[in-house]
Length: 106
Image (cartoon, rainbow, N blue to C red):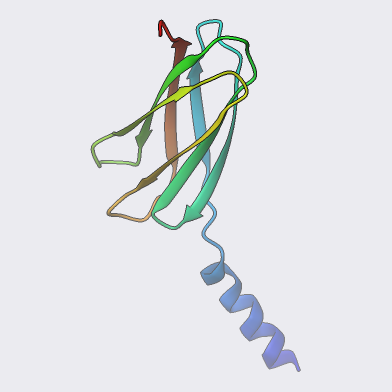
């Protein structure tokens, strides 16, 4: 029984791939809320929701260590939700997301 418990504790870190996600936001007066998620060891995502009354254009720059930043864009109508995901070549140790949103002129 003790061996089984030791094996389970030894395998626990291998099954978890959570990593810290930092978000630097510049909303420019728009009413956008967000949630982040670690999808896989080399994949991350951010979910955007426009709670305001105006359309919003958002850009997210995902940074993982030495890899080049990857940018994703979304245009959100009032009440709309959008998922932005990114896949890196290397495992993510710490994901940094720079989120910039502004009122859409359309």
